[in-house]
Image (cartoon, rainbow, N blue to C red; front, top):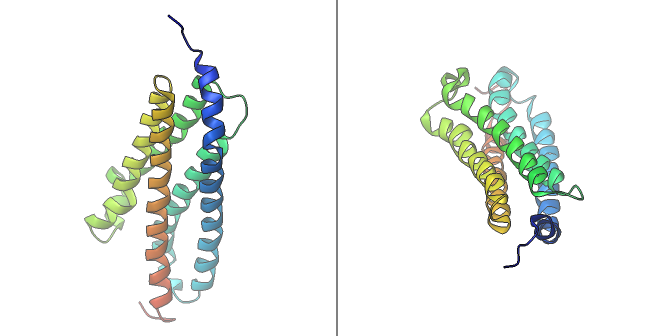
Length: 179
């Protein structure tokens, strides 16, 4: 019986996933920048809505930053399965706490209806759960773990793009001084 070293299995897989991590990280970083441009340009249109903009903007930036962070951490050289698991799970658990606080915390009452709460808290909570699951699976089935982490990253990216689009539409369709 021939046992394989998980370290030998992880390095080539991380190299194969490197383009994915770089692409998703670059997309997240670029979209953070574009989001700030839109909000800056739209700030004059909705000065009385600054608190609401922050309510929706902050989680979206956190989701983009999470994708950027996971991608950056997984491109570090010489990862071992435990260090890669730690990086993925650290971001995932922090995200579970953050998005969970929107589901049960003080921000819950700030959203207009339950659908917004699901879009800004529930979907991200599930995406962060996929990250944690991917990190844990990485120790047992490297390819499956990296795949679950990638699905979690893409889910966060998708949620953040959707939320950004909703904010952009609101800013663009609101005339200066209109409530």
